[in-house]
Length: 355
Image 1 (cartoon, rainbow, N blue to C red):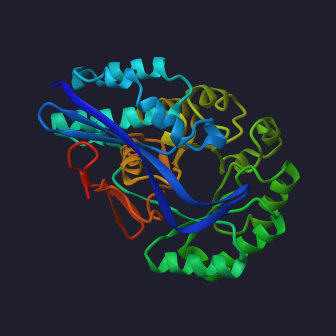
Image 2 (image 1 turned 135 degrees about the horizontal axis):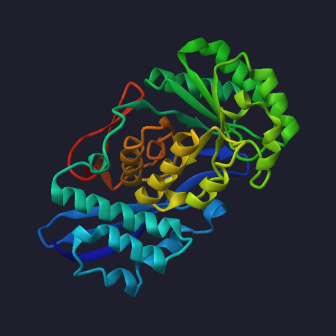
C-alpha cells in the first residue's frame, strides 16, 4: 500500500492554566502535526513538540523540516517499508528528534492501521495499565495543596511536583502533601536541574520518611559523576531526564555505578517510538527502570508514548499528562484514563479519531 499524500502544519494551542518550572513559566504551546494518507484512505497521524532547551529544536524548525522535498518524496513509497523510511529520515535529519518523532509516529500509526493491530501489539504488549502522575508547577504551598486535592478528587493517585528553586520550601511542600494525603497519594519530585549535590543530599535526608517515589533530574546535566557519592538505595530513585536524550546518552548513563536507577524517556527527546525502544533495551540490560514522560503534547504523541511504554517489560512509571492541560486538541481517543490508570484503547494503529 503506497503513500498518497503528506501534509503538515503548526497548531498554536494555549494551556488551560500556566505553570512554572525551575527555569521558566509556560502558558501556551505549539504543536506540529503530520498526516500521511495512504491509497486506501487510511490516515496515519504524527505530532511533535520538541523542547528547544533540551534538544535544540523548536516546533518551527520541525515544521520547516517536514515541509522539505525529502518528506514529499516519501509520497509513492510503500508503507510496509516504514522502518526503511524512518532510517532514511534519520540520515536526512540527524539530531532533530522532533522531526523524526512526527515522521516515526505517523508511519507507525498508518502501518498498524493497515495490518489491523494496535501499535503496542506490533512490538508485543508487556503491560496492561499503570498509574500516571499529574504534574503541579512551582507555586506556594497552599496553592499546591489545593491543586493536589483537586487532582486527587479527579481520581489521580500520583502527584509530580516541580521543585528546584528553594530546597527548604520544597521540603515543606512534600511534607505538607504527605500530611494531607498519607499513603493515599504517591509523590514524585522534579527538580529540573535545580539542586547542587549538597542540596540534593539535604532534600533526601529530610524527606526519607515521606512517600516520595522518585526524584527527577536533581542536578544539572554534566554533573552525573557527583551522584556516585550517594548510596545505591538513594540513586535507585533518581531519574535521568535532561541528561538522557537518546540511545547514545543511555549507553553512557548505563556504566556502573549507574548515576540514575530510572530513565525518563520522552519521544520528543529520542525521536519517536523506534528511538524509545532502543533506550528501553539498553536500560533493561543495565537493570534500569523506565519512566515515560512528555512535554505539553497532543493526544497523538501521548498515545504513541503509551504504546511504546507498554511494549517494554521494564516500564514502571508513567507521567503522560501532557495533553490534559491543552485548551483543545485536534484528535480524541488514543488512550483511556480511568481512576488514574492509562489504558490503550486497542483499536488499530494509535486509536485516534479526528475531532
